[in-house]
Length: 281
Image (cartoon, rainbow, N blue to C red; front, side):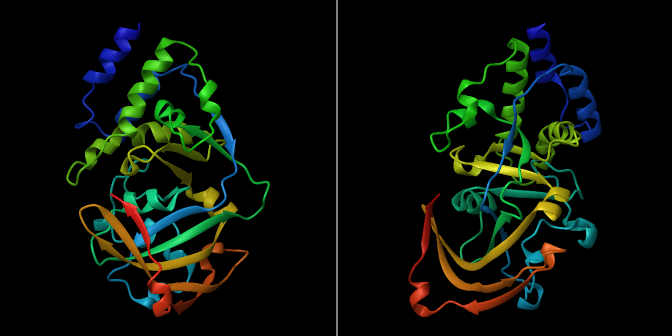
């Protein structure tokens, strides 16, 4: 049985199959598969975007650092991503700024905007599942309940190994089709109304930190952004250096629709700009 599943997973034509076909294939093959579920309560999730050619008039509210609303974006900019199909609104974030920057991978001299997201209420929990159990529990930066997790059977272990490989694969431009497997599996996990987040290792940080992919609806209802910054990127062959350019002196929180919260920007002083943040590539 184990060899059969391993063989079928390795031989399936992911490149030429649609996300829907892959999802159906997974659903049939992993019927009865069990996974660990956890309630998390992270505070201080980072998002970043490149704003090099963006005008300040388009950065007046935290909507500018919210998840992209593809209903308002030209379809030519719609792309497959790690957990989300073309045109699907989804919130990608990390609990570590360095991982966020590495995932973004800006070019030298780019301007980037960073937002820090928090829970509206302290006792809010996000029901989550993992994709990449082995990498996450080996991570020295987290004290994880996964350390004692045991697979129900060998089949579950093989399925998780395969799923993890898809979430940890480095995807080059023009190879976006490789995201289809992780998208299909994300769809299966997130079809459950009780699951709002997928936790998976950050490939860009060499699995050292983790990413949080959260349903757009949960973000709209339960999170807010109260700190925003703009940095200029100095990038060379060994590191990113972030030079502070401006920051949100105040964010006027809109309690009804948090993404409409207004940003009052202020320029960083010359002294501020000498205090940079560095991350190794």
